[in-house]
Amino acid sequence: MNSKTSFLGIDNVRDVTRVSIVAALYVVLTMVLAPFSFAAVQVRLAEMFNLLAIFNKRYVIAVTLGVAISNFLMSPLGMIDVVWGSLSTLFTLVVLRFFIPYVKSFNSRLVTGVLWVTFSMFTIAAEIAFIGKTAFWATFWLNWGTIAIGEFISLVIGAILLYIMSKRIDLDKLLD
Amino acid sequence: MDKFIFGRYIPGDSWVHRMDPRSKMLLSFFFIFMIFFANNLLSYGLVFVVLFLAIMMARVSVGFLLKGLKPLLWLMVFTVLIQVFFGAGGEVYWSWWTLQITHDGLISAAFILLRFLAIIMMSTILTLTTKPLQIADGVESLLKPLKVIHFPVETLALMLSLALRFVPTLMDEAQKIMDAQRARGVDFGSGGIKQQVKTVVPLLIPLFMNAFNRAEDIATAMDARGYRDGKNRTKYRELIWQRRDTISSLIFVLSGIILFLIRN
Picture 1 (cartoon, rainbow over the protein chains, first blue to last red):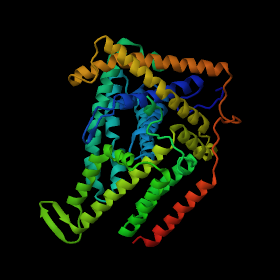
Picture 2: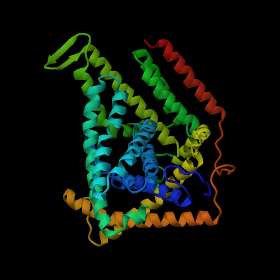
Picture 3: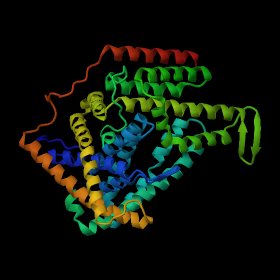
Picture 4: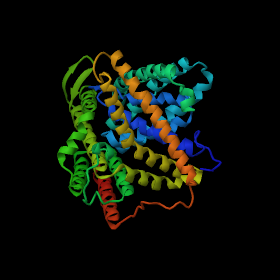
């Protein structure tokens, strides 16, 4: 790209293509592993990609884009979810990047990621409560509960998968 | 595969299909904005008139629109029930502990249901009539003002279209890997949760490795062709604002004005 500007860890063409491909992977996993959801609790396994932000800050944008595309392709709320969902992901992961330097070991970083991203589902609960307009708090708490359960399941599975993968391939080298 | 390539897009040449993606996106936001200001039967009626007009102009079947409701069914039921049992005001029909069913509660529950229906249906019309790549072009164009604050709009648009380009390719790859692993005896989607997680590993590792190799190849190809981002790049697909976009915008704005006059 030959430009001097860096944008959340994206400095050159190599970074651009890697970010794009991770965004595409997020979308593919959302579609391939879609059947993992039951009633009000939705498990989007691709949400484990949030944990990639632990490795390098450029995946913040990758996951944000992945969320935007998946929500456009699949979410019934359409553009609201595209805008709100991706801004919420961006916010969550940028904040997660702030924690990372203070957490040293790989495993505790995974745990931090799982807990914070699960907690951050209040943003989505607020979106739904906002659309529901009245009885804001009742709608908010109930949705935070159900959404966070699904998110927690996806992230724990994701953390376990990343842990298993880190034993077999050099994730640091692949992702950095 | 085709249905994945285009998401939920249904090819067609209706009025809405031919509209500029920018106007479609802006108008669906405007519509949502309108819904938030609707607060009585008359204003909701107007919202639905606009919605039905859009459905007619998009020439999409109502069946497809109803399918769009399914994933959010639980959420809608939840939200409406909360409203029914916690809503207060007006005549009380039934009450027990903190739960009560009241006149005003029922009315607002009905309005919330209408609100969800309208938002979901309009969003579905947008996805059914617009290709993801058109949306990417539209987003790029709409974000252009952000260049003032040095936001890398072109880079973002490039990443967006590259990602969209690779969804079908990686989808194919994922299917191939799954088939290859099935041939080796992996049973996807069955067994306990532990078993299922284990089956995802032999899918994820090759998918990751291949994807990153592919990213490397594209980067090399782009470098070799002397790709430079940003200023002075010409575009393969140009967006053109047509008369139909102006007319549609006028109709929406007019409905917006009427809505402000008839709401409480």
